[in-house]
Picture 1 (cartoon, protein in one colour):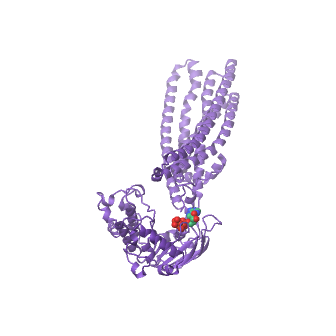
Picture 2 (tube, helix red, strand yellow):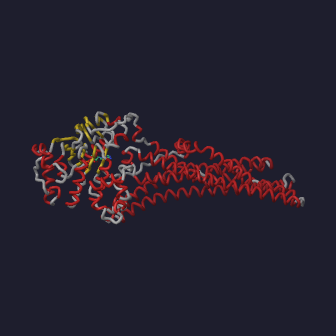
Picture 3 (cartoon, rainbow, N blue to C red):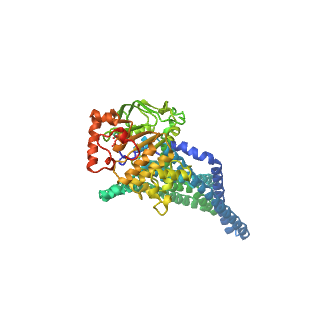
Amino acid sequence: MPSNLLILTPPTSQKGLAGYLRGALPLLREITRPRLGRFTLGVLLVIVSRAASLVVPGSFKILVDQIIAARRITLLGPLILAIVAGVIVHASSSLAVTRLLGKEGLRIVAYLRCRVQEHVGRLRLSYFDRNRVGGIVARIMLDIESIRNLVGIGVIEFLGSLLTALFSLVCLVSISARLTAISLSFVAAAMVVSKIVMARMGPLYNEIGTIHADITGRLSESLSGIRVVKGYRAEAQEARVFSGHVQRLLHCSLRSITSQSWLAFSNALFMGMGTAAVIFVATRQILSGALTPGDFFTFMAFAAFVTGPVLQLSAIGSTLAEAIACLDRTQDLLNEPSEDANLERRRDIGPIQGYVSFQRVCFSYESGQNVLCDITFEAQPGTVTALVGPSGAGKSTIIGLLMAFYDSSEGSIIVDGADLSRVTLDSYRRQLGVVLQDTFLFDGTIHENVAFARPDASEAEVLEACRIAHVREFAERFPARYNTVVGERGVRLSGGQRQRISIARAILADPRILILDEATSSLDSRSEAAIRDGLSYLMKARTSFVIAHRLSTIHRADQILFVEDGRIVERGTHEELYASRGKYYDLYTRQYWTAAAGAHPALQDNGPEPARSQSSGPAQ
Ligand code: ATP
């Protein structure tokens, strides 16, 4: 199967901020609805906090006009008391809102990560063919972290500030409608610039997110393939590719900084000019007696509460634009259809015997290009079907269809009388067992890796599976025995040991249909014998499908399907196909003599034309 190493994340469309917001709306609704009460409380606390902070500017008029100008010092004590009370209310409500919304933001991040991870686990395999794993990881970890700013403190603080601004605006108008109009005209100019810049920032942040996903994808691929990278001395080349991505990211981030800087510049400019204009007009009004100095100071202090949210818009605007773009991308991911989205898959299949029939099955990964064509065969319960044929012939694709990773484009696959395309995946797959060439181990203990197939299995069952699969022989030699940690993808074990763990896992799962992709590399004769022994036990009384490389497996198969160019071109037992001297004969004899030249352990007691009765049994 081709790796998805070179498949880049498709570029995301440039929707603009409103487009992102529209796309993100369902998810936004989903996360806010159950928290409406807490968010409302958050808004109320922000309003209380901001209202309390208005005590200080509100005191200016009394301070300047009644205490300083009229020299009424007796009012100073009560005024200071009022200010202190306001400060205490402001500080405590700020504390409460930060704790409430900060924690809620974290809970939302945790909820979204689990929700998206669960959905990703149920996506169709074709999604993973199109998208790199690192990119998906970046979406779950990085994108969702940025969403915290949108639903956490940021947006509610902003809402609270807006409400305070409205209240302050009323105060401003009551002091002087003319000064208010002058101030607002500058605020409006700043908002126009801010709107233009924000419209540019949405797509920019989306692009940054996509590049992030590319970088993480490439980085995780090159680190997990570090042996290949070093083997081909490709460190410099990897560094170049990485640096290319980082430069793209830098370029986009610089553009976003430029936008942010212009935003900050325009805000500072318009606000500063507005202040100058207000000072100019207000001073003339004070001199003409139309305004008191106390009114002027109060006006200036309240004006800060109106212009504040506009300035804040530039500070949190970019963060919010980024968060909305991330939310939109997360929603895109959640919109991807999951495997069980197919409404025809409704029937639970129940315990099966393991009868499998492919009936004129065709399949294409990309529409119009058939990879499999007219595949028809039957496998009776308890039999072994070996798939052989040249590389790229379609063997793994047949197995992929059998595992219901993909749906056939034509024809049908019948399992115990049920059409596989109508069966619920969970009920079917729990009866499948897989032992793949690329044995997949987690960075856990040997015990955890075996029990992965059935976490509820008893200790005795796990140990028994380890005994049958010859895991015991090496596990008990480690100081930590079955609690030995195997390393990422099992790197601390040999290839043969990894395969034995994978066989033990399948024995524990006790499947009705077994899928086996044999390893091509030869192992030392002891390991090979142990693996063959484990496999023989495993295949007993199950319907087995094997992408066969070991001659011993091919000999014992009840039927061999020779696949070429997506079609079954020969079928029969080893003896029948060998006697017909066709393509199988060519492949077999070539493989036999190649292996014999290298003293392949599988051949040590098998000649080129073994009788079927000789070739069956666990440890040929
Ligand atoms: P091998 O023995 O080398 O593993 P195979 O017989 O198992 O080969 P398949 O992996 O089934 O062959 O591939 C059959 C064809 O389908 C090949 O031409 C391959 O390029 C193509 N193919 C396989 N997987 C995908 C995929 N995920 N997307 C698109 N094309 C694919």
